[in-house]
Image (cartoon, rainbow, N blue to C red; front, side, top):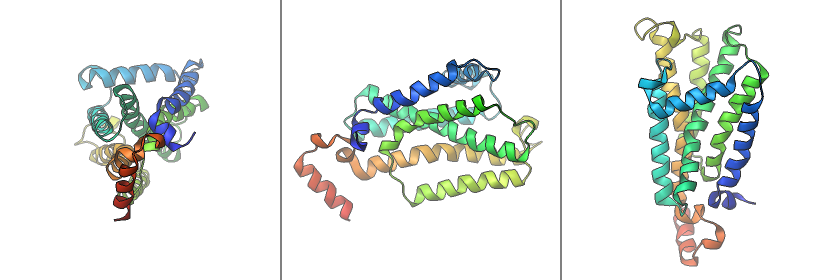
Length: 231
């Protein structure tokens, strides 16, 4: 199987990552990672009013649904994928974005404040399994300089947040700990940009020929595609 296969049948890659995610969540342990997965998923569906999450959750909720909608729109317009397959790929964007942010957040916490951020191996496995659900989008990626700048800014932001002492939004409101919100909110948005941007760029630059199976490509369309790439 090559990249074109996973573009045309994203359920193959999703199935692999979903099995890993379910396996981790079915393992009994004190971390209760499965409970967090269910509560967070329920919060995404019900919205900030019914989620009972932290003060940053409205930002997460908005970015999750906005990135999902944009990815779905581009996938339906730019590929031959049906609704179910397009929905599966689009859903990978918010899963991957929240996972990428959380992993960077937890690593920074362990380095700066090791006691409150100490985690069991199962919790790290769960974070990895959650993030891996975003891998379904990878066959559609196309990286460019804009993505490199976003990735660099994202990494540098967490370094600066750690140097500043890693202040948390749970310590107070925006007037009490403004630096916590100044780091958390932009970095949360950048995490979604990291996952969404390469998908949108890939769909806009390559169009249907690059996203359909090779056997489905019309010769005239392939010629046009090559000409566009040469400019």
